[in-house]
Length: 241
Image 1 (cartoon, rainbow, N blue to C red):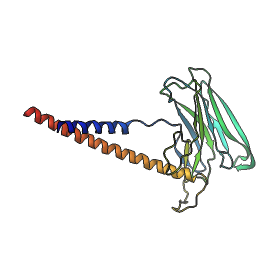
Image 2: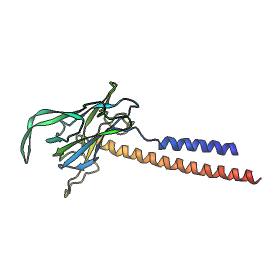
Image 3: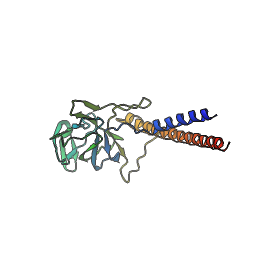
Image 4: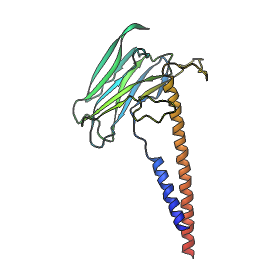
């Protein structure tokens, strides 16, 4: 009986530890969502996942035609880093309240000036832009990110997240778009797919997977607690006898 309880306790503890272990950090955008058509400050959070190397270069690719571009993007200053902004000329100008936009930002690259300025292991960097004029008719904005380490390692965060498929190893940073304030538009349950709809569905699926993982963790904790109680009871009986 004692051996069985001990084995149960070990298994439960192993399950709890496995489920409680933090997932690998990804390049993400903060905030995770914003109203359609709004102006918002976006911060790309870039973690260092290498044990010894530093992150020295970060590139963020923005949507360009045929995807809906963001008309105006300005970059916040980041001490210790240089910045290079690449633009792309549009075949059809985008008309805004400030006039016609003929060029949009397609890529922004930050480079650390010195090793001390680079992102050290177990740290993350924050790269901020001001995005003016988020798409009004889209459900999300999909970015792509590339980070380079001091040892030459390059990590490309460009994997699309597909509904029903295993979680991507290097998913793209995604900004979810919500209906603008005062909008009465609702999304029908059987709407025809639009650009980015696959990724939006994937976000929901990923959220469901996260909830399942939490549920499994709770179950494992309960099993571990029961095993601990049984083991304690058995030990007390042995001492009394």
